[in-house]
Each structure stands twice: as C-alpha cells, then as structure tokens.
Length: 229
Image 1 (cartoon, one colour):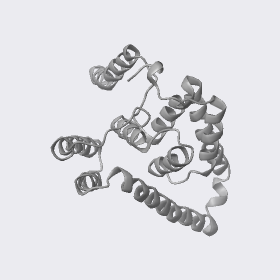
Image 2 (tube, helix red, strand yellow; image 1 turned 60 degrees about the vertical axis):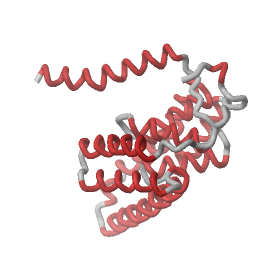
Image 3 (cartoon, helix red, strand yellow; image 1 turned 135 degrees about the horizontal axis):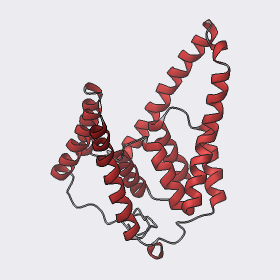
Image 4 (cartoon, rainbow, N blue to C red; image 1 turned 90 degrees about the horizontal axis):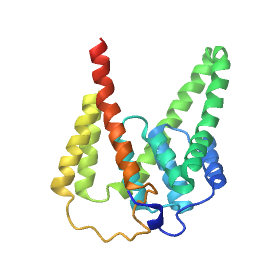
C-alpha cells in the first residue's frame, strides 16, 4: 500500500463521475458476481481507463482471496481508488440500488410469477444468465490466464470447487493456486510502470491496522461463537 503522494497522475476522479459510472453498471450488469467482474473490466478498465489491466487483475485476485462476494468488494475498491471514501460509498449505492429496487418489484409481483408464463420467463432468465457469465469468464480468461501454466491453475481451481462445493473446497483452491503460482509462475515478468501498478491511496499504518482487524474478526468471531455454544 502506498501514500496518496505516490499515486500516478490522473488516477483520481470526481465522486459524481464514480456515481454515474456505477449507476450505469447497476442498470445493465446482469449475471451475478462473476459476470459483474467482466462488466467492470469492460467499462472501467478498457473503456474509461481508470486503471490498467494488470492493476485490475491484482485487485480481483485480492478480493477473491477475501470472504464475501468479490464483485461487491471490487466495486467498492474501484470507487475508493477513483473517488476516495465518498467514491466508495457512492459506487456501492449506485451499483446496488437498481438491483434492490428490481428485487423489491419482483417480490411484490411474486404471486403473478406462479403461472406457466412466469415459469417460462424464469427459465429464459436463467438461460440468459448462463450466457452472460460464460461471456464474462471467457473475456477475463484471455487476460488473466494467457499461458499454459496459469490456465492449468485456473482449470484445477474450477475442478476443485466443482467437485468439492464447500468452504473447504474454496480454501483448497486458494492454497493450491498459491502453491502452483510459487512453483510455475515465478518467471520474470515484464516491468510494470507506476501508472500500471495497483496504487492504493492508503497509509501503511492504516493498512496494517485494517489488516490486523480483518484477521481478528476472521479468526476471533468463530472462536467466540464456539466458546458460547
């Protein structure tokens, strides 16, 4: 993590810009968390040039390592990188609000979805969602797994979470990916300029404090629940 003074020029923007970008994504991004990551890359990396592809890949990898929905964490982080704390909050509100309103509308009209027409509509939405997710995965795979080694790691992770669909399977996929990266992906990479690297405008002390708080909550809460059981 680095201080604000070392950020690349042009790496920050107005909170209003963040709100508009994420509100557009909130209205048009369908398909769930994996598809959202693809939409973020297309809109904010390729089109708006908020950060480089290499920096976005680092951010996605970090958020995939954390518990919870990666797309929400990536969106929150992108808003923070672009517009600070207010940008992060606006990104979350703008991206979540359209989905929340649509979900409320569907809940209010749930009774009308019980007939044959409603069932056919839901089946069609499921088919469309599969196509959207497949397109997002394929688009990101070409940039995040461009060689045989990384493609093998990705395929192994898919097999692990498919045949072990539990928290242990996900943890195993992370550990196997880390070990495989140490073994196969240590070849010298092309130099990454400061403008391409992931720059987080957060002081090191604050980052260390938040990391410690994360570890405390991650390991302390299960122990507290076990002690009170």
